[in-house]
Length: 136
Ligand code: THU
Image (cartoon, rainbow, N blue to C red; front, side):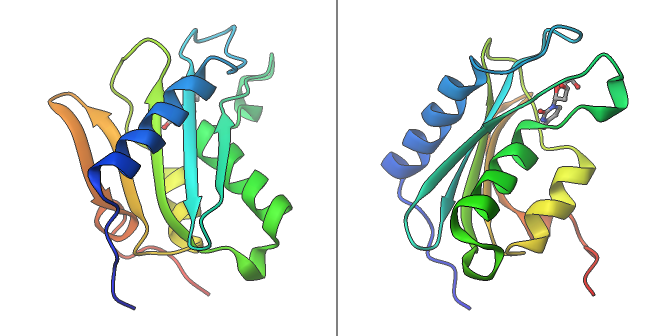
């Protein structure tokens, strides 16, 4: 499948949607508020934030919250992630964690991924972030 890259305006709008939803994060333990905005191949945007728990290991990252919302909203059969943007409420850099990379990969290895790294905005793909991603 050929990759149709998002134009800069759409990329920036997705990053802004991610930053906005980071304000809804439930992160009383880390105080690290993360948001993710996901654009499906059919043009719908789903958003998610991190949700922590007193039992720390139960925390769900923003990226997976957004992906699970998209599965619930669209049905997994229909879901192909065209792009996903990640941002924090206070501007700290945040790359998707390893677990989230695998979950993005599941719903399109060629998905574009945007986030802020130590040296500014990074535009990459799930496959680049996770070489040898697992598939059944
Ligand atoms: N977190 C995310 O939501 N996404 C990431 O890409 C990295 C980490 C969350 C998990 C936890 O609630 C907080 O950030 C600190 O690790």
